[in-house]
Structure formats: structure tokens, C-alpha cells
Length: 278
Image 1 (cartoon, helix red, strand yellow):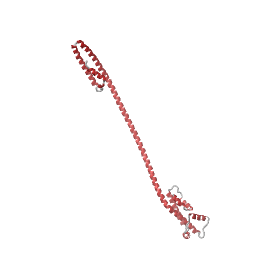
Image 2: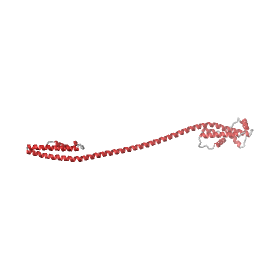
Image 3: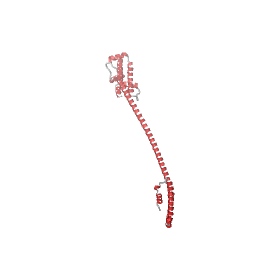
Image 4: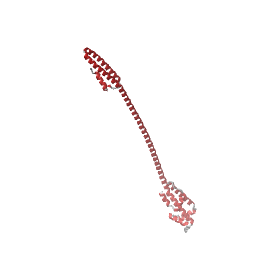
């Protein structure tokens, strides 16, 4: 736009005002539109001014003044004097006016020609800017979509992680409950087996004690009665020992499926006592 303003400033001031009046409102318009409106207004104004001249005045002005082009200060100076009623000497006012109009159209046409390429360049720049803007908008939109997708993915992963954690916690709680239940069951079974084993063991020990006492008494008797009585006592002892062994065997079969009697000290002592000859 700087180049446009430079060319516009080369127009005589009165022509700048006339062109601006035709262009009217331009704020907010793209630069190419502003420049093109000024170009069109300058061409229209030049055509209008030229159409107001009589052909003879045009021919006379070109014949007598065609080799005296105005500069910007010169044409502004002429207009200033004419507005004050001062005219040139030696030429008809119509010829002087025709020369003024022709020079005005020259300024306008030259301005239009100079700014026409600017319109093309500005349109190209605006097109590139629009493309860059569209690309930037597309990039930002893609970034927003990617950010939204990442946010949804993170939320989904967090929800899945929370569900997995809850599932593991529930499974661990169930596992602990199963282990505690199994431990309680085994403890109750051991207590039940212990409650079953102790009375039977005490009964066997008591029976063994009574038999041992009886055997002791029989031994004393056999010593007192002699060899014949001793033989009778031996037979009775063998019978009693066999009964004790049968009782222990029955006890072992009853509890052997539930209790490891090989590690039971009282029971093993009872076995040794029963196996020891008197």
C-alpha cells in the first residue's frame, strides 16, 4: 500500500479530493479492493471530464498548448488563479480550460496505469495470506482435534486402569477370604481330630497301665507259686499282650487316616511300652 499512497500523492490535490469522493467508504476492505476502487474512480473521472469538452476546444488546446504539460504545482497554481478570476493572456478561456481538463485527465490516466499492477500484486499477496490463514486454521483445528483425542484416550485409559485396579483388589480380597476360610477349616479339623485323639489315647494309656499293674501282680504270684503256676501266668500274659496289641492296632486304624501317629510322642511311648517284655 505504500507504493499506492506514493502514486496517489502525485495527483494534484483537487483531483485527490474528486477521486476520494467517488470511492467513498473503504475502511475494512482488502488493500487490492481499495486500490482498484481508486483506479476505477480515476478512469471514470477522466472519461467524464474529457466527454465535457468540445472537439474543437480539444484540437485547439493540443495545437497551441500541447507542448506545455502541467506539473502538479503548475496545474494547482493555474486552478488557484482561475478561481480568483485571473486568466491567461493571448488565448481564449475555452482553450485554456480545455488544456486544463486534458492535463487533468492525463494525471488521472497515468495514476490509473501506475496503480493497475499494484492491484494484481496485492491480490496475489492477499491470496497467499488467505492460503496461509486457511492452513493455520486447519493446523489449529487439527491440533485441537488431536488434543481432544488425546484427552479422551487419557480419560479412557485412566478409567480402564481404575477398573483393572478395582478388579485386582476384589480378586485379592476373594483370595484372602478363601485362604482365611481354608485356614479356619484346617484349624477346626485339627481341633476336632485332637479332641477325638486325646480321649482314645488316654483310654489306651489307662488300659495299658492297668494291664501293666495286673502283669506285675501276676509276676509276683508266679514267683510265689512255682514253675507250674508261672507257666499259667505266662500264658495269661501272652493273651493279655495280644489283646493290648489288638486294641492299639484298632486305635491306630481308627485315627491313622486323620492323625500322623508316627510323630505322636505319647502314642509311640505306649507302643514301646507294649512291645517291651515283662
